[in-house]
Every structure is written in C-alpha cells, then in structure tokens.
Image (tube, rainbow, N blue to C red; front, side, top):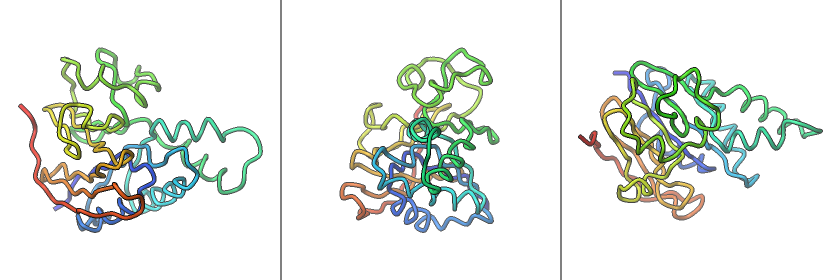
Length: 212
C-alpha cells in the first residue's frame, strides 16, 4: 500500500535521513515522500545535503524550500560562483514554497491565518512561528510543517506535535535532539538521535496520534 511520508529540517544530517528511509523501507516506486525544507545549515559542510535531496526528487519525491535554502539563494544568486554552487542555486530556485497533495498542505514554516493561500507572503511560508501553530484558526488542509522545533511547542523533546489540522515534524535535529520521518498514512514515525554529528543512534519506530 502506498504511503505518504514527510521529513523536515534535516540540517545537514543527510546520512541520518537516508538511514531513516531505509528503516521505513521507503520505496519511491510506491510511496510519496515530501521534504519540507532546511536541508542545509549555513556551514558549507552541510551543503552536500542538497545533492541527497536532489537525488530523492529524481526518484519521485517532492520538496519545498526552507528559510535556509532561501538564505543560500540570496547569498549566492549573484556574482561569480563555482559550477557546483551555480547548480545548487538553480536547484534551490526551482523549489516551490508549498505543495498541496490530497488533504495535506506541505510547507516549511506554516501559513498566516486569515490569508488565502495564493496571497501568502514568502516570509511567512518560510519563517512564521507561533502566529500559525498557536492560532485558534482552523485550516482547510492538514498543514504539515517544520521550522519550529516541537520541544518549543510544548511536547517532549523528539516528539512530533499534532493537532487535527496541523502537524509539526521538526523534532530538533539541528539542536542535537532527533530527526524524524513521519508516515502520515499509518500514523507511524521513524526517528534517530542527532546528538553526535555524523553518528546516528537510538533508532525508534513509534505510533502517533492527533491531539483532540
């Protein structure tokens, strides 16, 4: 059975993301994978993660731009650049800011309440925080987002944050907590610790549910 999978805020932990996809037995011929931005950090050693993401897209995955990809684009779009940077800029520039798929809206940070999707500002799609996830507004999609680490949203470190119409999946990989791949179809999560850079441990498979 086809699954809808999502991962966000990899922040250079491409090897960890690859291992989570293997743990979940991801099959690009069957499953639909969505990547929600911030694949890199400002450190150049993380930029190779863009090649990993590009490879996933070539296999059929879909990806949106995060605020750090926008930073990368702003930093390198002008002037003379090595060919590898030019290729990365072209790839990042082609990433959409959101993707609608079935009942889901996949976006890096969220959307501003009360504003039509087509009228949303780029800065909000890439950077909004509490004004979105803590709003009493209700949305016409299930908004799947990253950007704000879930431990800042009132859940235990490493857990996802889920309500009826929005699901936060940045479980703090950047901050040495966990990187999570979410199965939206079967309500399962696959995660690993990012406490030690480049060494991924404490792999977990868990069930999750929507908070009522």
